[in-house]
Image (cartoon, rainbow, N blue to C red; front, side):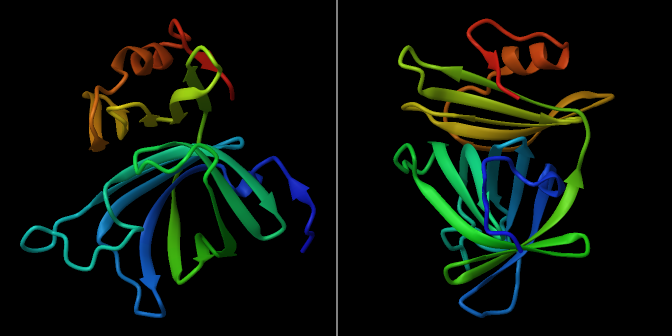
Amino acid sequence: MSKTLNSRAPQWLQGVWRRAGRAIDGQPPEEVSDVVWAQVGTYFADVRVPVPASGDGSAGLCHLDGPQAFSGSLVHNGDTVTWRHDLDTEGQRNGFNDSAVLERKGSTVIERGAGYLEFWKRAGRGPASVLERSDRTGIPTARILTVADLTVAVWSGRRAGGATLRFDDGGWEVEAYVGTGVIPWQAITDIRSGRVPPRWSRVA
């Protein structure tokens, strides 16, 4: 496989993915969270919410499972992918890099990182866009990725957060929400209507 650096995400990776399980340090795979990853062009957004199993729902959780949202840009080098975070509810510094090897097996993508495996299943493809809001210095403060009827939004600041939303005949449904702050509803509804809202820019 070629090891040429490519700033474009592979075409087969475009769309929405849901995590179907993860294995830590060689343990059997299991899934304890609802995890959605949207990839549009080079931009990604990820929202993770634990699914309570018993008690407070915290048993068995690791750093891959906790409530969090993050977004940024993806670069791949052969079979190695690097996610460069610029929005992150966990307080990672701007420019934090996270790398892993991706392997396709049928309809499943296996992510192999340091001490873990994550298994991803495709959850949607279709018309896609990315809108971004930045501060006066050009640093992103929020990003909205839309693929067909699914929207993933991540925002930063003192009240950083993220959300996964779906639009159907009944209107908008919030599938997952983490962090604090207000979901950028006006921007999301403008996008659905084909408009670019004030103070936002379409970047993909």
